[in-house]
Length: 145
Image (cartoon, rainbow, N blue to C red; front, side):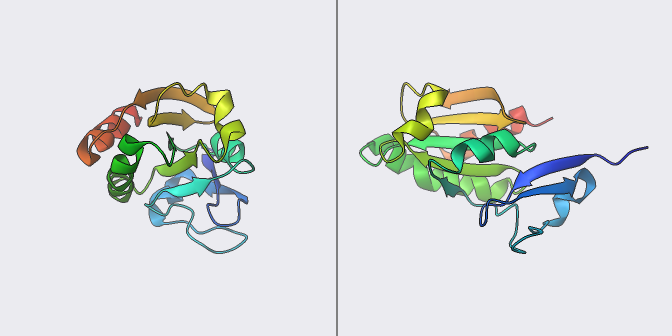
């Protein structure tokens, strides 16, 4: 039987890592910078990193599209962070749409905040509106296979 691998983009140095699927629960580190690949905390994406993280990550990746002027976005930020800490095998990331408009444009974000779930470069679900921590966790768990 051949071993299954997943690709994971390092949130620290953006190197793409090939990780045996069986090792994803063992807190794998980046082969380039030795930092943790799964941080259990959201990381900020910018114009250069957003498409790479979305396209290259094979694991479930949840991206929160938000803006600094959006009060519901500000209120949801700690909830999103809390949800990330409860789901360490999921990549959580944020894109500040008022700072990186071009990075958000391809994803047709119409309201804020909007969380979009990706796996293997494909959008699999989206959820608009601020949610509390437990609802975010439940939504993400419903997407895991």
